Every structure is written in C-alpha cells, then in structure tokens.
Amino acid sequence: MSEKKTQTMKPATAAQKLGILLEAAPEEFQNTLISRTELTELDTNPPEWLVELRTNGPHPKQVVAAKLGVSISGLARGKVTEPLTSAEILALLQQPPAWLVTERATQFEVREEQIRVKDRDAERARKAAHAARFAAQNEKAAAKKR
Image 1 (cartoon, rainbow, N blue to C red):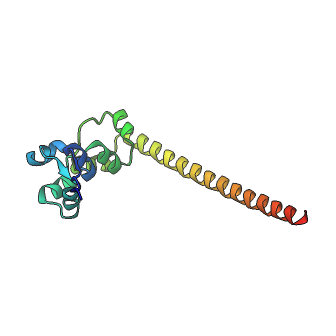
Image 2 (tube, rainbow, N blue to C red):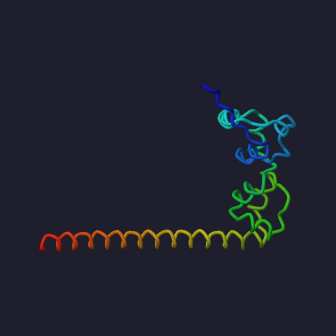
Image 3 (spheres, one colour):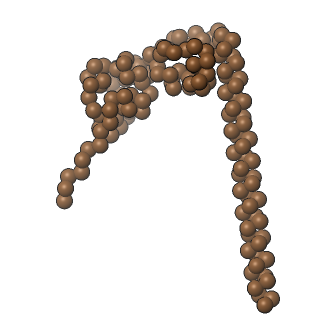
C-alpha cells in the first residue's frame, strides 16, 4: 500500500483560514507550507503570536468587515483599505463615521432581504411538496377506480 501524501497549503491560505493577516505573522509561518494537521493544531492550541494577532490584530479585511458589521465592498466604499487593529475597530464602533452608519444599515437591509427570500423559497418548496403529495394521492385513487 502506498503512503498517503500529506496535504499542504500555502501560508496565505493558512492565514486566511486562521483569520489572520499573513504579513503580521512570524517570518517562519510566512515562508513555510502548512499541513492540514499543523493548521488544526494551530487552531486548536494557538501559540502566543496567533492569540495576539487574533485578539489585537492587525486584522485582514474580511475580519475587519465582520467586526464592523459591513461587507468588504462597504469597507472599500468607506475608503478603508489598510488592515485595522482591534483598537482602531473599537474606535470606529464607538464613534462611527457617516459611511459606517450607512454601510451597517445597508448590510442590515441585505440580511433582512436574504431572510425574506429564504423564507419565501421555503414556503414555495412546502407548497410544491404539498401539491406533489396531493397529485400522487389523486393518481393513486384514480388507479384504484380503474
């Protein structure tokens, strides 16, 4: 039986999965392929540098957007192009600029619409399933009469 090859990923992929900014990680992490086992170990038992980055940043844009409650596009519209630290994010949340208030409202509306569409689709699926059951029952009843 042949040995199973260990799956590895680029440091950028591992950093994204860990929710950290690659450029802020230690040099050793930035220059080494990471196995899935190593990634799991880092996530389960994070070293001090990883705990520090996750806690204080600087954070990548997807983390910044999530912490601010906006989309990545919203960050771009707000001209936030650089990674932010937790302190900078907190400052924005405590005294939100106009763009942040607008983007958070937009994000809320988008989420509400997603919920509405999901509920509508579930109701349509329920009605279609009911109609299919009804048709099957009618077909079965008609077959008995023949």
